[in-house]
Structure formats: C-alpha cells, structure tokens
Image 1: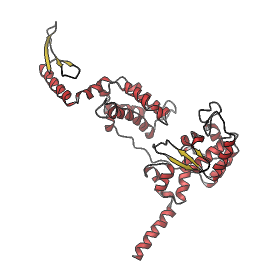
Image 2 (image 1 turned 180 degrees about the vertical axis):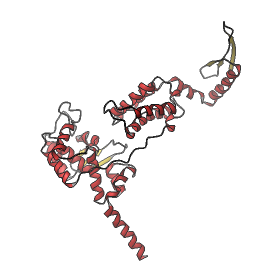
Image 3 (image 1 turned 90 degrees about the vertical axis):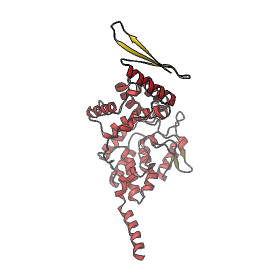
Image 4 (image 1 turned 135 degrees about the horizontal axis):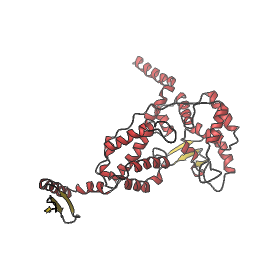
Length: 354
C-alpha cells in the first residue's frame, strides 16, 4: 500500500514523500512538491507493480547504455564474423551515450547523434560517411537494444523502431571483361606471393565472400566431392561451394605441402592462426594488369555477372551467392536478356497456340 508523508523543511517549504510497500516487491519511494502529484505517482506506480509493468521501466532507469553494450559484447560479439567493425561502432555509442540510463536513450537523441556522425568526416578517410556506413552504426546500437528488450528485460520496447535507416544507393556491379580477367589471372600467376593466384581463382569461380574464402580451413574442404563447406555464412545459413577442376587441382597440390601448424587454407607466415594479408600483392597485380576501379569484392560480382549472362535465373543466383531473398541479386537481372527473351518467346508461343 502507498503511504504519503508530509515534510516541512527548515526554510518552510513543504514536500510529500511517497512509499509503496507491496508483499514480494522492493519498496519504492519518491518525493514531490505537491500532494496531487504524489498521489498521482502513487496510484500509477502501485497499479504498474500489480500489473507487472513497473519494474520493466525501473530496469531501464537502473542500467546505462554502457552496461548494455558491455553485456552485448560479452554474450554476442565473440560469435560474430565482423566483430572488429561491430566493436568500432559500439565504441562510438559507448563514448557518445554510454552514461545515459536506457530509459533516456530516446529516438530523438539517437537521430541527433546519427546526424552529427553524418556531418563529421571520418578520421580514417577524411571523407563523409556513406549511407551504408551510417546504417552499420545504427544496426550496432539496434542489436544491443533488441537484446535488452527480448532477452534481458531491461527495456519494454526499443527506441530504434522510430529511427529509420538511411536510403542507400543501388549496389554497384563492376565485373571483369574477358580480356581483363585473363590479364588479372596472368598477373596473379606471375606474382611472387604463392597464395594470390589460388585465392583469386577460388573467389572468381565460387563467388565466395573474401572472409569466407580467406578464412577457409582444410576441414571445410572435401577433395573427393570437390566442395568447400561454409558452416557460418553472413546470413547464418550453411552453403556448399563447388570447386572447379583448376581450383581442385591446385588444392590437391597444396594439400601435399600444407603447413602443420595451421588448419587455414591461406595462413599468414607471421601468425599461422590468422589468414594471410594479400592487400599489397593484390594491388600490385591489378597495377600490372592495368585494371582500375576494381576491388576484391568485385570478384564476387564477376562470378555472379558471368552466371547471369550464362542464363542463371535470379533464384539460382541467390542460391549460388548465399542470399535468402532476391533483392540482392536484382542488380544482375539486366545481364541475362537473352535468357529472359527465350522465356518470353516460349510463353508467347503457348499463347498463340492457344
């Protein structure tokens, strides 16, 4: 039950202290300048406790955003593929809003910080952050707050539902022409780095993401079935990549002289537990091949583009690339006009016969 005590200070000011005692619940108290507000709070709080609503709000006042981020990092960050990037984004929110109780992390203040982030050049590049990068910052905070709602019961609802994503431009599709492909593979084969040619050929012929191919282990390779099994992909599903004859032959040769201190397909010479860093030999190969405006991820685009031009349907492309929806492969739709034209002709022929 609620008890209201009138208090008179030495200066003559009056206040009203409310205490609520309900069996099975901790005592709640608050002080107000007016009796009406004290009664209003007492009624609302006591009702909230009885209905099981009050302490959820109370938890949001009890825990700061920094506490939530730290718990998220302990429980979730270790299993993530891109944990370094996620940690960078979380560090930003910890520095900006970490001292705030979760109850005070409002949509307005999140939007204000995202707007500030959009206006400030990146310290690393000196350029303004893209919409995609800003969405990564947003998603990092959203993930923490979702955990606070669903699994920790520190929040009733996430404020992120009122913080929309930035509109991103349509994804680029840069792929190698036949001539560029031949020049690049020749440059990679002539490279002094023993890993570059196989790594590039593997990416070109499987469409694997850089992290998937460079982080691959021998346990994932089945030389008999000619497959590379991906157990943990970006969208969380398993996927098997087919190893073409040239790649398979190189892998069989590599398996005979593989390092015994690492299970990685491409281990670093400095730290065998880490994948090799191919940035420098990759850039040198591009320069020797005379190829501009091309990134490692564009090897994946090249694989998808050639598959589309060979007649692969959008569902087939999604399966090859490991996408759960067709949205991400729509960018390749224009590359298969002959295939779609033949389908249209078949449909038209059936209509005419009818």
